[in-house]
Length: 452
Image (cartoon, rainbow, N blue to C red; front, top):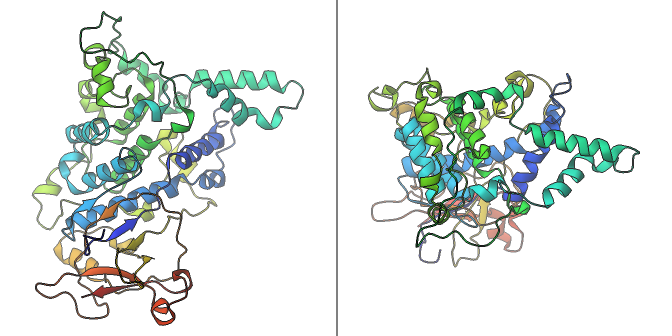
């Protein structure tokens, strides 16, 4: 960052794959008895899973990227630990918000192929498609651990484990399990292994699932896409059913699209010759997955309408159909823990000792969506570089996270805005730090100042 003085670094509070895996496991625990019991799901237990908070954090990151590119006319560099998990989530979601093409069925297929498959998201490893000895230990501990000492509990737990394994989480009757058999009948192509040609040789190493590498990263991307579709029902050519069926086929292993971790594996195992693409399944039944409310002219020909939109993180909800539940069961009225997103930390690398990292609040809830240039200008005129954060916030644990380019220096912050030939840089400075020089930024209200 030393050579990019005008760049703003944003630390997003998106958790790692282990936290996301545990969050989904908590949802499974909250819903696992719903098929054999008339008692509705415990919504407080679902809220404690933190799933919605994680979705909010991902969508907030996509909002920051979208605003930086479309409104601030900046470049954005997204970085996570490996480059194929959170990076793909943010990049793909931002493109959905920015470009109407990716909101069509064809465009979404291109987006998944480009930002997920070609960029090396480890679908096989993240989905846990292969066997692992640890599966048996994990299931016994997760499902029957507390009853291990009860007489007869061992047999009951073994029966329950076998039942759950056979049934599958996404295969219950409320999730149209028969639909997969009817729709895919005659489409699944299984070829017997043939002699390998020269130059393409699968590795001799036995492949197994690493249980600590399994995580619902792509699941979360589809969930966030559902949120955008729900908030903007006329802006997507495909419907919710398309997203749900795509999520199902990530785990179904009926097609070769999601069976491998990278392009090299697909070439080595001749996936394009020996398996069928999942996109053939969707394109052969295109009418089933089209959105009746889609209005293609909104993005291109209606004066005053914008081609982009911003996610509204105040309207994030449970994707009930993905979990085989009714909407009123997960999103109905009743006591529930309010979801909260982790704060976004902004900072600038600088030799000035008073410069550090702070929390900045960019958009209020009613500024997340806009139509027309007057409304857009009015919404973003309230964004000031010099506005302080409303409350002091504790910095969360930070891992490698995305960065974004500089924002224009317009705003009523202290000092004049950037004039011709001058650049505005964001400096995260706590006022009491400047006066006392010894207090932590946690003890003072954070502020952003325009630096000449």
